[in-house]
Length: 317
Image (tube, rainbow, N blue to C red):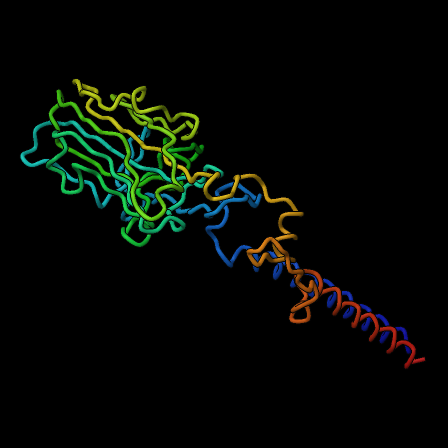
């Protein structure tokens, strides 16, 4: 083979290798992330042992119709359950929320606890609200509400004055209350098909100021008696919020919220239990001929190209 033909074939071979390796890398990455964009929480690359994956929903931005207002200290989002008292009696406002977390402390919508209801009784001051007295939350949220999560109550980011930019709570808002009004709420009652899978972690009450999102909901939650169960407005302090923090009970679900080890991952895919305590081994090669994941395809094609190159060199001698 002459020198020019040799250089041309070598160049084509190098370009082919680079292209195939790139395709293999992109294909392997896209397969894992495109399958379910809500599997992992923000800023996390660790798979966790949970019975329900985190529900990741970006908070509305300034150009979104559900973005309401910001004054540099707080951010407000349009809430379908946001109502104003008629007659309007004052500037008092309240937000009463429920957040449901999986075993790892990530917000979820309750897909694993269907036909389960959470109820919070409220005082007479909020009885005028069409969804209050009591407040009732139905799971899964995605089956019962157009906007399952409508508040960013926890986390921080440099880009926002409040919250981390991801929705995490289901809330009701009350406006138009007198400034001397007392807002009351009772203890959470959980009822339904999977009530035993949900535990009440506690309550977070903040009154007379902007809601502080720089807290961990599990660590900040307090027993009902310590949280307060109510607050009374006063001039220049006519706002208050409370969040009831719920979490899937790991003892009931069997998940612990820890990172999934390679041993757990491989054992779950290589064996199955028939319910009698006996384990049936699954052939690890079954179905493996359908495709080669990640770099497997690229490596195979590069090997073929290499064989073709050397074959052409021998043929041209």
